[in-house]
Image 1: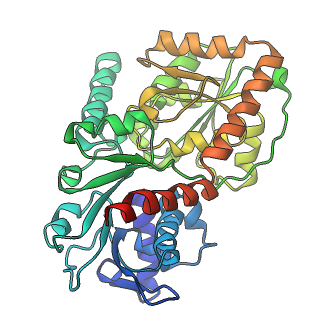
Image 2 (image 1 turned 180 degrees about the vertical axis):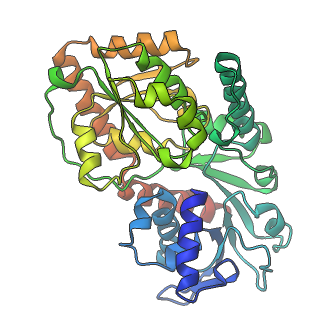
Length: 387
């Protein structure tokens, strides 16, 4: 995510928008405003065209626009700033403050007392995330005597949940539970996915031994090391690795044998989720295996599920499989081996049903239309009731 934002920031700067982080975008509804909202999130969403390829790189671009549009539709004016804006000082009273964790603490104490402060939590709590991430590094050291510190995703210390009146999360029970210690009301708004696939039945017998690992950087964090070791010992199964391999050279060097010298493991590299290559991967894989140690919503898994790809995921991936797939308990190689072989050995008719139900569940829960509806319900039934 940070790399994508840096790339976009450079592009905007080249177009003369040097002060992206200091901009304030003020948007007004079609009527006299009922009140004012301060949103601190992805300001780039309103600096580029909605059809820009960046909108496909992470769900938060579209979700920022939808949050803004929800408040505008309900008659509220919105001041949008970047979550990186460290110089903004509130100059008016706000009815609601909605913000990602970064910079939440600094802004929360500067707001008027009546302002309702909402933490928009798109990751697990930083302690949970970092504890789990370092655990994966320690496990790797024990297994292979190597420390790949650049292959985890750490979250900066923050007190967003402590300074919030309430919060929303994009993930499931795992993400929510990482914040419950603070005793603040937490509401789930399931993460959106831009993927739109109609149901397409696949030849299950032809693909029943084919699996996909699909994720961004932070390979140890997201369990790619474990998956590579697993499939290196499963020569009758095929693994397709879709991720930015060029960004983690130390990881690729350490797992050179598994990635580049093992016949049943195919290093595809990064793929555009709206491109032909990604569709090809989805069509030829029965399942996605994703033993991440901490997520805020498991968006990459959900993108695959929306095409009927069956999930084999860790509990910490924060994805509901709803009985159509496997939720791993400890992500040990033995447990993953059992899960993969069990799913692949199921009867074709059962796998067909499982794939279709995966597609139906993910399509109904994680569409952009569903996010828009759930966020509007949250504003109407929670925020406006508390106002």
